[in-house]
Image (cartoon, rainbow, N blue to C red; front, side, top):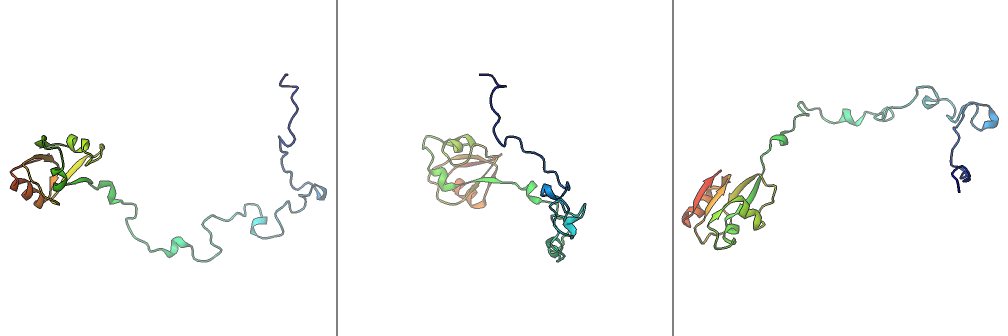
Length: 151
């Protein structure tokens, strides 16, 4: 078996549509463009935003200055942990760091900043290292005899 012996599949190569080559071609006279009108002329395509003469949607929407500025580029996001969740961590641990929070599944591995909130109760003294603390979280940790270390 040789490649040059293999038969060609029917319809493998489609012939180019030749328009404007007389009536017997099937694409003569108007060349498949119909009669008259904008689309029948050369260069007579319609813009994708054109809506048939009615006021375009882009003009109906209110104009506001500074639309390109997005403030979320500068947004600071914290991984939130409650004081009650800290109490559920193994009793042998006395110092809470980001590694311990990751091990216990309280924050994700890619968490940058950590904030401790005051939801729940703390029954033991802990030394907590985090980037931010709420006022109630500070009170509860210090009331339990713990220490706060802001990073």
